[in-house]
Length: 504
Image (tube, rainbow, N blue to C red):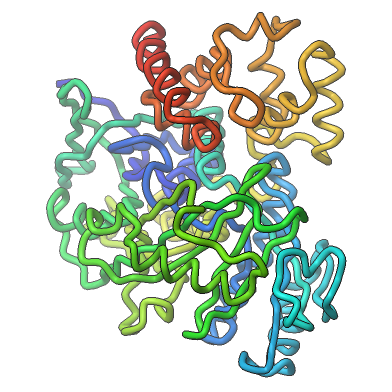
């Protein structure tokens, strides 16, 4: 048994846990983050991959959430331009939907409720339109344009962890919390390495429960702290199909059950369609998309697409559980996406802060609010800072400039490959490629084109980004697995497993 002392122990390596770790470490706290699997291996890589205000939340009177989300959209576009980019949306409209005046009013609010915005404002669009009606049925004669942004959700999580480490935090993946209790003037936390079975302990002055879908389980089974607040587990599923049009905009579709479904450009030649809202009783129930959900998403898309989709068109799918704060709403689509923070303390010290709900767009503000909650217990905390410092790799103005800069230092490497590296790693791609002059310097190569994954990048993900298993690299640190065939994925997986053992 080994023992270490920290100011703050954070349980959960999703976007909220990593965001809090980054903020806390940058304010001078000694931070330990514990994740039972890989970073972003649960909810934080199962999202619709959007940084958005949530247009539909206006109908639910979630004005505070929408305002904060739109303000954060502006901040995050500047902090992480390599993994977050503006995205144009088109909302096709006909007489069977919400009245046009209502849509215009909602979009007007969306343009203004968050204050000053840098993205283009909303407007009406008449169809046919060479760009914005691409792929739609000819019977659809009008629509609306508005702006939001897309994100690589898993990489956003990892880069927050990288930044936390750069500010002094210790990040331990594949480490499960087995217990926790207040002993004297500290929290005593038991841990177990899920790969080796090795156990250890840590001491901390405060604990953050950012376990996501397991937030209540941690309270009940590990730290044994009663709390009335709870979560509702709602499964969200997505399908991926070949690109439904050759333009770069997304569609937001009003389904006949009044829910909305997105069709979002993914990578270079694919479209992402989602999401569903299905109440589940456990995390295990939410791992697989159901046939009914596939049918639902295809039906929603086919109401608008000129070329109908079929189940055979689905090249990939994913499903995951969103741990929403239980506000009593019976309809999963109407449960709040806002976050709620609950603090338990013993005699005014040794806080346990639990995070309920939240969405990826507001993770940074959630972290700031978490530190505000903890500030009475850590009076030496410095001021908020994460809104000004770019995330690792984001120290540039525009993507074309960053790609050109990398091409100047590595002129022999294909520009499309350099572009993909910048979109994953930003300026950190220079560190990844250090010493390389030709493709042969990258080591063994897997896949080709959009799926190209090199030994050099695999090593970088293992050494710099806590990757351990094939899925960590093929599906989270990169999306190369999405473009590989089964034989290529198998060969890459075998190499990654062996490479990890060789490097550790």
